[in-house]
Length: 572
Image (cartoon, rainbow, N blue to C red; front, side, top):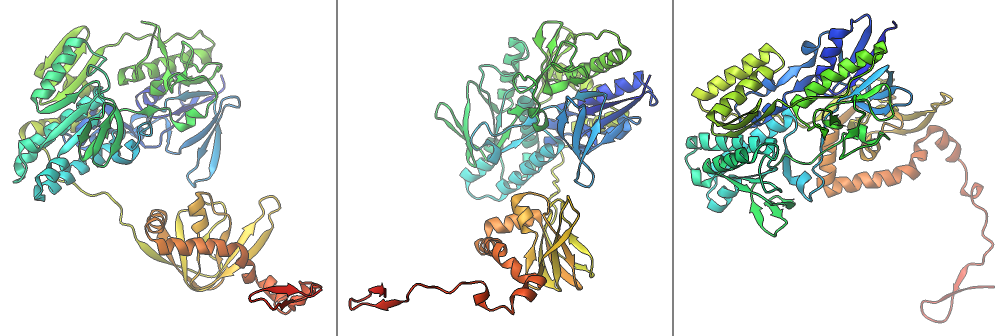
């Protein structure tokens, strides 16, 4: 049997489980498995709230894919286009150039993307919780607000700093609210000017009950327990808009808070949105065996897929346990399809639900057993501890949890913002400073020396010199502004010194500083008509020529003054 190439897009629960199961059935000689994931690790999403609440360290929830899947080719390039008819994917290569790869079977396990644009102001003023970076950012933000509140002499402003609003009353919203509440109420004793009454944590939910996935009795327990712990729960409250001061609700009420955490608003990733296949609620519709509708060699699993569970004829929810089982069964079906055997529809009986609500309390439904309070919290930690993908991660998380039971949570916060700077670079004659076709990353100001602007015709290979730039000139701004690849090559003619400004710093300065923005705009306008003057061949040919070479004599009579003031006429 000929060796096949199986491409998996996405390295979450579904994608990594699918790759691991495929490798158990297929040897490296029989099958090449390639997994594309933008990060080189799998994120254990159920514990992101614990990272935000400083219960565990961020690296404990990041499982390196290369160590998890040693016989799978793991790549971090971003897949940008999928051609289902030609069985080809296009991705951005290591050098930022587009590349393609063919496949025999394709598994789409891209998960979901954050979409905060459905509510005005949400994308500008709310913090998501989707990645490890989001959790670290939220944790840092909380620590900074605590420090601000500690030295604030305005009581109203201090309470504003310490007011947190969580949008969404599902598992993610409830868990992050509980973690933030535990972090604030467990550490404010280390601050001299912050009291328990200054703290406010509000969960805003559009439905009439929290946690709609569990039974009503456990929902009521969760709400009551959260309110006793100091949290406020606003039900039947739909967010209408978000501002820096808080959120406005549909009933006209405004909730004040310096921090808005959004746990709702997921959508399909852009690479899947461009596919022509049918979709249901921003998820790819599949056949019963998880193949895409109308495709024999393309499969969709996880949060990005609308898969009907043959067990209860209901759509599969976007949870980790369903994603893992879909990854395992999709791998089995691919093996069957490769052997010419009939595939099986997806069928899975859910094991239950677990949700921590803070203060060493949780709600749980597992194998028909319902628990609440501390026993459920202990079960929650035990289940997730052993669901972590490696013993190393289990040891790290277990140690962090044990430490958290004895010692207070860590209040240290390290800033991770890279230093923005303007650097100096030197080039020798013949060196290319920027190359045609490469991505735009920097803006350049020429301090000493001369450079030439050249463009290559991609069809004929012919190179044309467009002009020469000298000290005081700048280049590289057009591609940054238009967000496109470089349209020409800049090559040093003499020893050159340039100031190099990064893309982010260039954008910040040009947006904030009007004179700088005006200079750039004028240069862009002038360059279109004045660049020819710097072309050596053009200057050599045109400068000696009299103006009459290019202009014909005017036959119209000149204007002469009339007796009336300010009036002129033409002699005829």
